[in-house]
Length: 100
Image 1 (cartoon, rainbow, N blue to C red):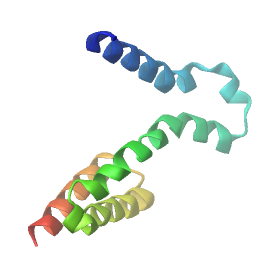
Image 2: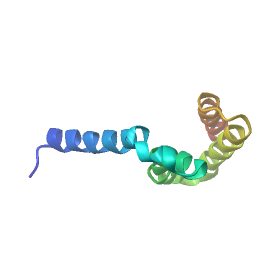
Image 3: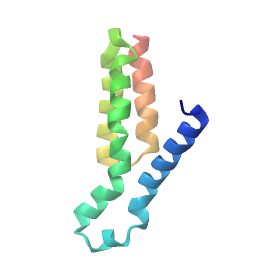
């Protein structure tokens, strides 16, 4: 069986390579703008399948609170193109809905 520390370090290295590769790949500049931007955002998009199940499963009796937080964050991020404020709005919205 593999040492847990080694497994964590290998996973961290794989994650770092996956996240940094789009920024240092020169061939991205020759792609159409839409595809280049999509490939740069791919590591962020990959987090969705990791986070979304937790939103629904952490509070099974109030799953709608997590979806409300995601909806508010998504709408704000789509309209304003920010990252910090949508995250804070998501946390505040989910907390408020869980407090109901």
